Image (cartoon, rainbow, N blue to C red; front, top):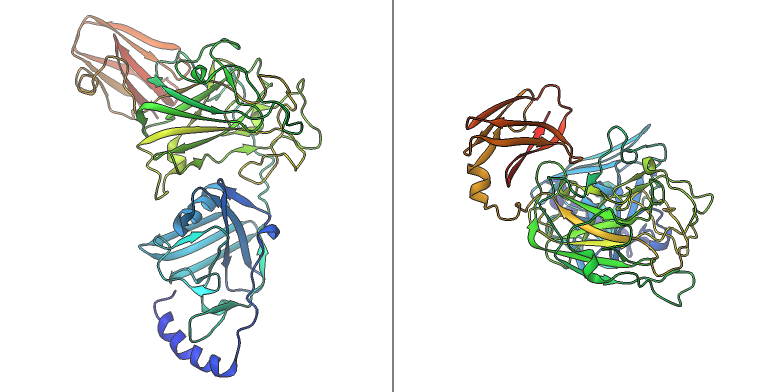
Length: 474
């Protein structure tokens, strides 16, 4: 609320109560009227923002894990999924909420709390207030409606469901071998470790014909290194199946991508995909915002093709042997997610059916179309491994050795890179993110100088013997 809101309400509600024996019906929106749902989980709420002008009150649906959620986390979810939405806050107070979908631009500013929950005044700030399944949260100010002496609120502005974002023209990086491709090769020196635990909950071979489950591979096939084999070391999830991966050491958020998920696609367009979620407590999972701009007029069948340029942040985007990378920084800001201590990665098979009864949707509310049906034991996403690129050290290398025996500076670098190695007369190698050797030299001194100006911007691995360090070229 605005700083003087409590005083103003105390004065105005007395006169209002004398004139109104009963508040009017509150302007709300039923959950089944909401068009755009974001987040994931079994609990859901509706969150509305009123920009205090006629017909500009918009509502989102937000899903979450657990029995309750902080309002701050719900706002964070909307901001991550809907690029048109942004907000800022100071302590327990909201400073502004913006919705920008040109030519429409809406900005609600002022130092205030959320206006109400289920028609009653919020008791705490947005970073402390929790809500439960079925709640209706409203952000606005006193101009949105009227209240009584008990601080019960009734909005008089119509609440409208926000429309789905239109980003169908966006294109992302293409298949392995093309310029700018972000895929990670399974033998890349940047990979420092692999998942060590895997639990599979199988989905059906065909979700529309629920008579049998996928059964190719076992849980143990989801752990350890991936390879270029389409059959060995692979476990199939089935339609809507789930894999939960755990690690001996947590994954941390570092420079560039932090982990990569591998599938066994036979070619560049037969893409069976999965959502990727992470957790730092094994209970609350947060999903990477995925995009699928593939057409939904015609079902992609087992022999059909998916254009990888229209897919983003979905595991299974690349051919066997090449992993889809993920950056934990994208999920920063949640109260119960420590992106420097990720203990679980959860993969949820995308049911590629375009029938709304069975379909799964991307971050923009669009149906995801991938090969369906594949009614065999190997149905659905085929997990080949999850690789770690931040948080782990190479086998046999202690952290002290990694920092003292071999280091490179400045990092990031733009031109000259200096490499310090306490073992002279040893080969020093630099690899790119594709695992390709791009520079090498036998150094006779403890310090080596490399001109990086001609190197494309990106992440590289400096390696000497069993030791390696990551650097960024900008």
